[in-house]
Amino acid sequence: MGSRLFPRRASLRVIASSLALVLVFIIVGSFFLWDPEPSFRPSPAIEVSDEALRIHREALVVDLHADSLLWPRDLTLEGQGGHVDFPRMRTGGLDAVGFTNVTAFFGLAGLKAFHDRWPSATWFSPWERLRFQLRKMQAWVDAGEVALATDAAALRFHHEAGRVSVFHGIEGAHALGDDVNRVEEVAALGVLFISPVHLSDNAYGGSSSGSDRGLSALGRDLVEAMNRAGVMLDLAHASPATFDDAIALTELPPLVSHAGVRAVHDSWRNLSDRQIRAVAERGGIIGIMLAPPALSEPSLGEALDHIEHVIDVAGEDAVAIGSDFDGYVQTPIDAEGMPQLSELMLRRGFSETRIKKVLGGNVVALLSRREH
Image 1 (tube, rainbow, N blue to C red):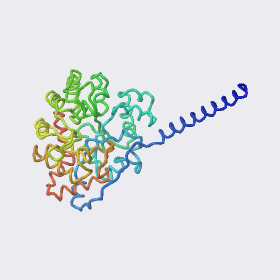
Image 2: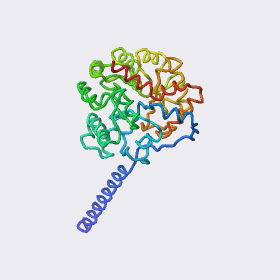
Image 3: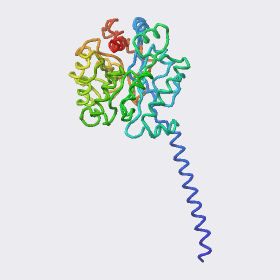
Image 4: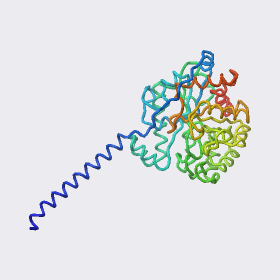
């Protein structure tokens, strides 16, 4: 009896093993077929007048914050998804973008690097993930698709020549590991600003979505290294205590690459009037996001409310655009739709001078102040 059952049990084990193997293949296949990038769902388009389009085309339009390098897209091609690619930048008159490099978010960045088939070193190291993104953009620069601009003169030169410009920020200093000497290395690669923290506390300080602790000793070393290297401080995502500690230490004009204002929408991602004034008093600027959680909904009209509030509190030299395009958010427009923002500013009675400052003139002025 036992001898007759043995082949049957062996067969069942083989079948079970085969089914388990098939299940593993299905799970792994589904993982690689799954596309985690959110699809862009534009809001109804706003008709752009000839006057607004003229102003927009004459302006040097700069977006301080886009996370496009996080996604496995070829930015030289249009129609690959997301909010930003170089063809849509040209169509939308978006002359320059700060491509911010994301390297850690809730422990999933390494898994995403594996999913997107980044080099194996990036699966385990934020530093390697940063270097990979910088290399990816540099390849497009070397191919002549875009130009790297690390100062005000370069932005102006490429704008006049009709070339799209790029520069870099780092979203969270954990990308550097615990070696602040790497600031010099990334500065040479086109990084203009670094935020000490991103979506959670790290060894450098507290996040606005974490605790309210301030800069650590390592965080203070970071700001001092940034001062030496000419790299600006980005206060986006900083806890109130980290904000205060860092802005007191920086010797360069600070910025907030992407945020909103609490007086319009009381969000953990937004700034108080005191913080707005602190940035402006040090010659800095605030990039207004075009999406929640800085806004209550994806709305250009609400984004303009935030812009107007910064102007009311700190003047028209203190505000810019920091869309957060491709940052796992839903925006009302993509890069091609940027002229709609100019149209809304014109409808609200903004002067041509003010519109051009908001669109990018204030970023150019910030870089000029950084150089002196």
